[in-house]
Each structure stands twice: as structure tokens, then as C-alpha cells.
Image (cartoon, rainbow, N blue to C red; front, side, top):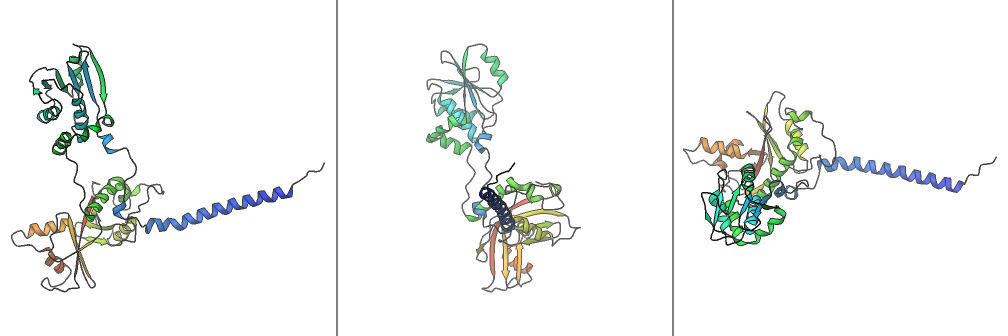
Length: 363
């Protein structure tokens, strides 16, 4: 019996297999080439760092408000969150807006501490509302057991208000004013260094355990993090490491945070007990004697001389010399081994901000 073999089809199959193998090899080679480049020479900067995608912060901070209304719409019970965040106050404002403006009295159960503030919020929608010391047509409580006992005396309809439904109430100017007074938003960064510090703070919040895994003396050092794009440190960040009596820094914007930490660690001995890891923003050149804020450090450069003072070191210097007129610019020149009275146009001063990680207790 003869078996017919189509040589043309067999040849095509071999070519397809060969191309597939070549493609796989190319992908592997490209990954191996790009891996160290991505790890150590990323072009990402602190200004464009964004946190990993997570549940929106407002969602994790909100608790729905439950409204119980009598069938005749004359009595209302509001079950509000115990924590009065900006988001929760927005939901409470929406709940008050659902109550007829003809109401005259409101009663807050004893566990609610901010009764005066909540009364002002309610009066935005119900101007004639007055505080009552006993049961009233509107009862506000965060004690569900007490509400359960009250609701048994009448028949109520129940509905819930979530933040998604309530956030449109923020367009009301009076609500915005109330929120800005009683639950203000955190201040927005005003300049490049402030933005970089905010991004560094977020980076530490997102990746602190991974950052500390590069330091042998921490409990994280034994953790074997998976090597994937999600866990690789791609931040070009200057660093300083401090022990009780030593401080060393690595200022290299072309290396990754991980590499900068490794380079700095080599400057210590195995007996040194590391205490603080400082992550530095970029540097901003300033004139001598320019004012520094409390969270800013100072760098001095002159020829081969270089000296770095972290914000906490400047604070210590100022407190020790509080009886005199402290001049950190003279002090940093002295620390660099230069006469503090000597001036030269080639001398350069730079300020920066830092985010600190306490290595001993991983705070």
C-alpha cells in the first residue's frame, strides 16, 4: 500500500514552524535586552508618576445614608455615618435636601458630636430648622439600635443614598462653602518640587515594601517579589541613607531607585545600623541666603566639593543655634571644608524636598 505525501504542504508546515520558533526567540531576546534598560534607565520622571489603578478613594471613604420617612411624609429618621468625611457630608447634604423645607425641628441623638455643624448643613435646605433637645419630626442618628427601637412606633418607607447619587449636590455654592470650611480638600502642590514630593509620597504608599526589600536589614529583604512590570522600580530618584552617625547619598538621575539604593548601601559597613531612607525630589538651583521651608534640604557644590543637608539636619542645626542668627548657607560651606566667609560665583546651591522612610519600624 502506497502512502501519498504532499511535499508542498509538508514544506509549508516546516516553514511555519520555523517562523514560529524564530518569532519566539526574537521576543525572548528583545525582552532580555529591554529588561535592564527599563530597570535602570527609565525615562519616567517624578512629575508623571501615577499610582496603580485602584478603587477610587472617595468610594472607600463613603458610607450610604439611610432615610426612613413616615407614610404621611411628616416624620424622618436619618441614619448617618459616624465618620464625617467630606464625602460623607456630601451624602448627608443630599439627604437633607430630600426633606420638605417646611420642617421646623431636628433632634440629634447623643453620640453625634458635631451637632452644630450638621444643623448648619441642614439649614441650607431647611432655613427654619431649629435644634430640639427631645424627639422631633427629624431625627438624626448613627446608632442603628436606637433607630430600630424608634422605627417600631410608626410605619416607615426606607431608602438609601449613595455618594454616586449625592455628588451632584456639590454644585450648590452653599454646600461647597460648608465643605470647604468643615472638611477642606488637601492643598494642591503649587510648584514642581511640591508635585514631585506628592508623587514620591504616593510611590512610598504604593511600593514601600518593595523599596525596603532592597535593604538587607529590613524584614522585607527576605521577600521574593515576582519580577514583572508591576513590581519593577522604574523611578529615577536620588536617595540618602542614614545611620546613627553616618549619612551617604547617591544623586544619579539616570539610574533607577533600586540601583541608587544599592550604590548607597555599598558605602556602609555591615555593622552600621541603618535608620532612615530619604527619597529626594529633583534639585532646584537657588541664590545664597534664599529662604528654605521646613521640608526643604540644601546641596552645596563648588569644584570637587559637595555637601548635602537633609531637612531634619537643617532643623537640628537651627535649633542648636537658636540663640544666634543661624545661617545654613555658611554652615554647609563649613561642612564642605570651606571658609564660611569665602564667596565665589562658581559656588552653587540647590534646594530639594524629601520623603522619609523609617527603616527600623518600617513606618
